[in-house]
Image 1 (tube, helix red, strand yellow):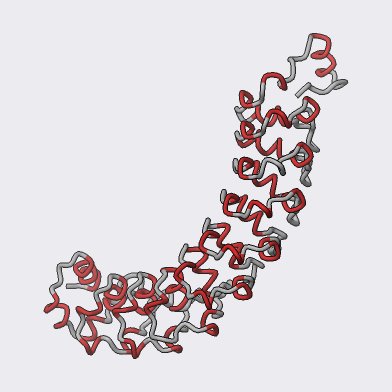
Image 2: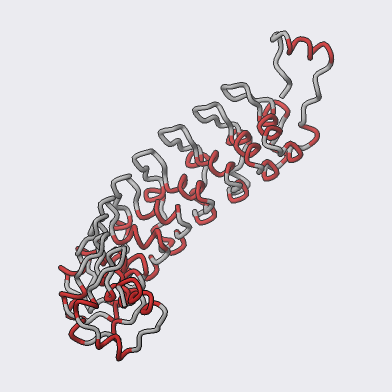
Length: 341
């Protein structure tokens, strides 16, 4: 049986425990096209116990595949660290890196199985281990929705506020992935949520962009916070309008002034909501004909943005501009007048 067939037979459970244990070391360590050995597969599928005890040794469990992942990485990623002999779960082995800089610990944090490590691990020093992108274990947990499986003592405010190479804190990553609810409410402070990334995005930007503005404490959705600008001029209120989350903003904070805030292109949140098909979220009592006539820096009005995107019906009839009359049509053709929308 060639290597590919052997691996496929293992995946399909066609190898009995006896046949598996009878395989010599060179067969266990034979590599498939991705450089994975049978030990990699056994670790991934939680079947290390089916191997002979002699195969649960460093020379088998620390072999790297073509991406630099060991069977320990696979066991951590799949949540099967309990199948690894505890003696092999040493700091040195847990810190082994793949070619992309991921340690066994990062994958364990992402899968939520850090609790499977021996007592005393992980500690704060290990929590701060970084990938090549500067992510620590909390960043990985925040991205994968496993922050609630991190010991509370290791997910405190100072650790959550640490930034990766893009300037993203754990709060940013959690907001982008809809996992802010896994962070203790007392830690969702203005200081934490207004911290900017290298691009100037706050955690409020991240929550608005990803559709999770509802996870932000309502008390922090103030006018000043909602008009915070990233370095590209994008505000939180623009992101909320574009992603259909204006209904997450407390009624007392959603004002005409807020809705006419301009970004660097001259677009208002009205333009953003109109183009994205969310104009229906804007309370009619906040609208005026003048607001619907506001043009961005290329001359487009909110109504035109809605019409061009096929959402003109969302604009209340009272605010839809009348078609130009014959004289105005001539003036528009001559370039002496602008269209009414």
